[in-house]
Length: 113
Image (cartoon, rainbow, N blue to C red; front, side):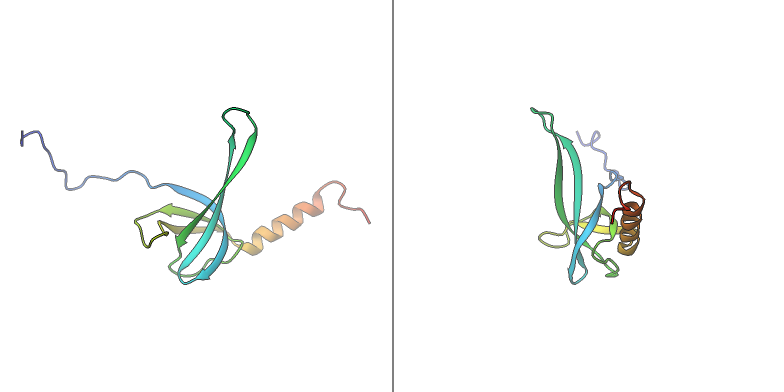
């Protein structure tokens, strides 16, 4: 029975989950709140819904600002609610704001007085 039990010292873990979302709060020390949106189809009625989840993520360098688009990765529990960490900042908040205003300028019907 003990012959069949192999213990692998270098057992690899699976790939951690990752999400992309927008920072909604950075008022805590080394912690940010990230809102992640997901489009899903209702099982019975077929209507498309937007599901929004908020995750508390660890931000070691305190580099995230409100409005930044970030990638968060699942990690070990760091506190009661914090099980994610910020892997990278994909788009800073000022870039997201510039892209939004530029899209409004190029939209048809934007030249109205």
